Image (tube, rainbow, N blue to C red; front, side, top):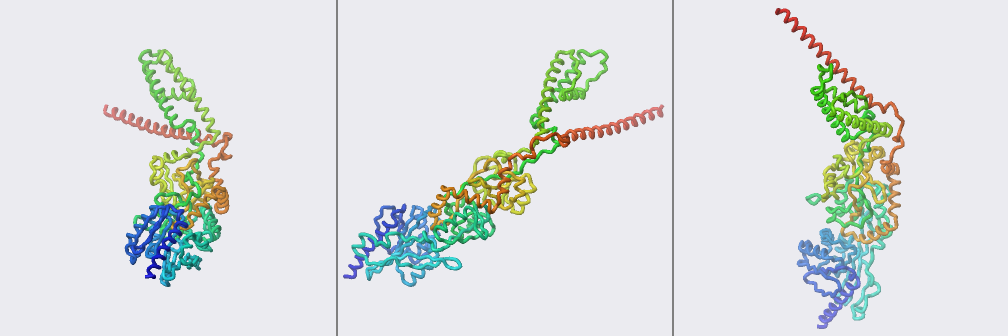
Length: 625
């Protein structure tokens, strides 16, 4: 009877002790999840919302129903967990999978668990694969027979060549009593902190070569890798870097498999992935996104406009639309002159011209003479003819002088091909653009603006070697690139120094995104990392890192070539007239002489054929007579 009374007193005191622990260490969380088996009984009075998850079958740790309940409780906002003895190992078995399936992200997860630390339980606990992602754990061992309670935490140490070794560290052992309920011992008033000093434990990072954001050479470099290195310097951890095999950001396939950077997170090979990753909605369900580490404007490198050949000089004075109007006015004037002359010959024929035939060719040469500002003979016996001559002279004078002035400008100031400057120009040009991976278009998957839809549909994926060849040989294709927060250009590896002399960036971004770090949903340093990013941003350190990484890994010449691509070249300033400027005139003269010669030869052939035919007909008539 006395034993039962002692057990009841111990049970009551133990529940009050657990409640004190929860109030001390979990009251800062949005809500607390109590995980227990059907045999556990605990009643907590807590100022925060409490979600209870019950394990129906403690013997079945792979119970999918329990996993689904745990996911729902995490989505309800659970950040702190009170785990009772019967549900501890099923909870640890489902910890990673449940957090990976949940959409709620909590950075400061804390676990208080009751446990019996026999040899089997101790070994199973320390060998569990979730120890690395659950450093904030407080274990409560109870001994009813002695009325004692032991408080333990895990001590995590690095293991060679990689991994961790988990050990149990005793914090305090004491007997439950009335005086204890007035306050916790000094040693456990603060929750065990194993993140401020990680004692050399690893942080696994996956990346790909993408300067200036990430450079994984013998000495790691790049703005984002430097950010993680600074985190490890502050928290005494070791950075393990993995280069993804195919050097791509990757994607998730319908069958659930994944590759690239996203694949390394899904397969739990890394805790962090960096390489100018954006806030892609189709990645969000698989990872936690840090606060933004920079702004990126995605745009296209398009071919620089070339100098137009000199043989086009005579045709560059007017734009095509004006040339069309000149041609239309020329045709209308020719028809008007022809009809006026034809009518005048019938109304008032001139003396000695009764046998004259008004031909269309005469009207054409009449208009040509007006346009080149030459005198033209036009009888003014009719008022209509006089008015027509007046307006045609005025029109020809205006067109001729306008052409002469524009030609003088064209011959001294070099003319270039039409430049593609804006996003609208790029969409209207019909030009395709390309990159080595489809991940660039993740940001435009849900775009609805017509320009963005057009640009997205014209994106093509090619290999790096193919793109390196295209960047020097094709002028009908653009190439994806991004402009970072402080003006530096992040380029794919196929854009080399020579290519930057042939290409120029658009004046505006096609779209812009925020660069983030992709992290595992169970990475315990997430909160500390976000805090570090904000401190680096507000102090301007990121600008220094960006410039230094560009100088060390890309060189400033490539950056200058792109930054000054639209600055006028000193060799293309106004120049004196040279023989090359008259190539267009010589071209027109050559074409005219060639056509005249061909037509002259054709006329001779026709004339000789007609003469021979006439001679044969005369001979035939004479022979018949």
